[in-house]
Every structure is written in C-alpha cells, then in structure tokens.
Length: 433
Image (cartoon, rainbow, N blue to C red; front, side, top):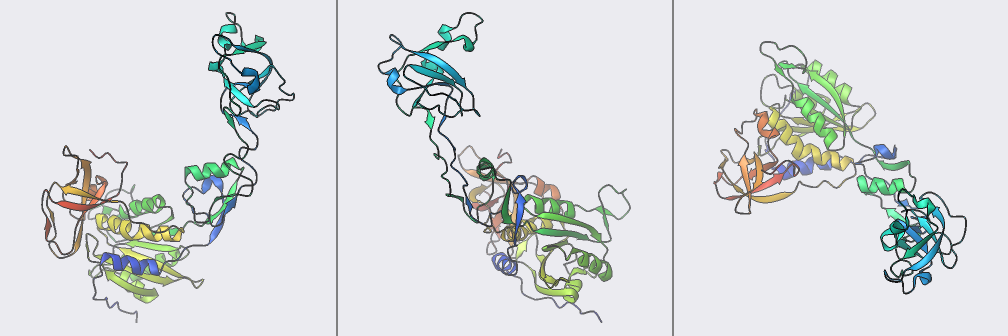
C-alpha cells in the first residue's frame, strides 16, 4: 500500500525553514558559456588579461599630436605655428615620425605617433580660423597652437587600465554589464561560469485551466505556474514548464518523474489539509519530507523535501501553497535564495527599510505577517508604507501593485497607523509615489 503522509507537527520560523532548505541545496558545477549568454552568472575561475589594455598609448581627445617642446610659450596672442604632416583615425597607425615643428591631426582612440608626446585639443588651436568658406580640414597645411601643451597631456598610456597577466576578475564575480564589457575588451568570447539551475515548475489541481483555453464552469485559470516561471528566470534560473497535474497520486507522480531531470522542483497547491491535496502523499512515497508548515502569513502550508532522481541525485522540492499570493510570496522568500545558492551566489536578503505604516497591519494568529504595500517618500521626508488593498491570499493584484512587504512580527497583534514597520523592498524601480 502507498505510504500515508504523517505531517510534522512543528510550525517552523521563517529563518529556520530557510536554513533547512539552503542546507539541502548545493551549488551547481561549472560550464563553458558564450559571453553574450553569461550575464547574471558567476565566474567559476579567475580571469587574467592576455595583453595590456590599452595595447598602445592613444589619444583621449580629438586634436593634434605634437611635441610639447614646440608649444613652449604659446598663447592666443602669440600662437606656435606647426606644419600639419598627416591625419590619423582610430584603428590606424601613423607610418612616419613627428619631427620638430610638426603636428599630426588625430582622432580619439588613435595610437600616438612616434615622436609626439602631447595632444593639443582642437579648441586650443586656430584650426577653424584657417579654413576658407566651404574648405575642409584636408586643405590645412599648418595650425597654430594657442596654449602651451604639457608632456603627456590628453594621452592614455599603454596598460593604463589592465596589465598583461593581471587578474582582472576573480572567481565568484557576478557578471553584470560592466564585467561583460571588461571581458569583451580582451576579445573574450566564452567564459567558465557556474551553470544556471533548471527549475521544474508544476501546478496541481483539477480546477485549473491553461491560459488560452476557453472558460468552463467551476474552473479557474492557472496563474501560479506562469508567475513562478517568470520569477525563476528573473532570479537567474531556467524554467522548465510542466503544465498542470490532476489531483491524483498517479497523475502527479508521472509529472514528478518528468521533473527529475531538473535541479529543483517547484509545485504549487496540494500541500494543505484538504482530502485531495496529494503532493504530501507523493512526496512521502517518492522521496522525503523535511517540514510542511512555516510560521508566516500568507504562506503557512509550505512543504520541503527531496525526490530521488534516476541518476542518484537528490532533487530538492519546494511545495508551495495554491493561493496565488501565498505561492508568489513564499517563492520570493525561499525560492530566490535557493536559486542564488545554486548559481554560486551568496544568498542575500532583499534591502530593508523602516517606514511609517499608513494603515494598521493586523496579526490574528501569531504568525509573521507579510503585508503587500507601496512604499513612498512622504511630505515629512520619511518613508511611508500604504497597503495595496485587501490582503487576502487570493487577491493577486495586491502583489502586482506592491513594491514592498511590510512586516508585523509574530509577537505583535498589530502595527498601528503611524508606527514604524520594517519593509522588505521588492522593487526599487517601481515608482515610490
């Protein structure tokens, strides 16, 4: 006979639940990744520069490459007149040598010609005044320097940014735009990074329809799997969308077997006390269970355990509640840190701030309350948190409108209006109106 699920009786604090989950989840192995696909991943090895950057002395400005000594005493009243012996654009080399009394017209990024030791910007020359109407700069054969140049002025030296052999990015570095740019500047086309976790996302319930299917009596559209898959990818993972499993042990078992190629399995619904909540039974039969309730609201019914994969791996499983707000909020608190750990990142909490509660945040049963709120700067120059509307766990728009989670602790029955509350900031980019 199938093993019946005997639930653990302990309702865990949020921090202990997270610690248990992270303890059973491991970082993933490295992979070779194309540079353009590596954004958001973690370097698995140090990266050394293969050559100096810049590889040659080059100009930081458009102007004239000159010998500084030839401009001694130059001023607007008494210009230093130099012969223009050439022109040089970025990406090319000047074949000659800049001699005494000579200048080369040069564009930003071009290598410094031999013999020159300074760049005179165009605005410190009389180039414009030398041109006849309609005349181009190619006709200019001499130029007057109106300000004395100093040796090395406006020159970027070879190796100024990076020296050959220098470690420029260390193992464990998160690759963001600036890091990608540094790697690209060295001609890097691929890097060794920690592999992205593959997260299987599955909804359960006979009442669910896929978005796009026609409405039917007694049915609702599945919002959990699309929302959770989007969060998986937002947090850096790869979502494997497995659709919907019916509320039977056999149907769910078949879907779970399909999911075991992943690094993490995430299901929604089927973890409360209802007669048809079968995730617990499948977890008990196919794997192990560590806990199934957390002292938080919304999101109390949250199952965590592991499944045995055919290749011998233990695949972590997070069984989220079926109510959409509970599902998204619990994945924010527990799924996000797991994905970051698997990516090789140190799991870090979201930013916290203290805000004035504009409305009461009520706690009726000794659980930690996470109230969906919009945070804004008030006229008193303090942050204020305003609830996004009704706080029921089925009011999905309350989550969509929130940029923060205002907390009422377990040992408080209420946060009163005007009282400070701790807020977890979800989205600093959302308008803080």
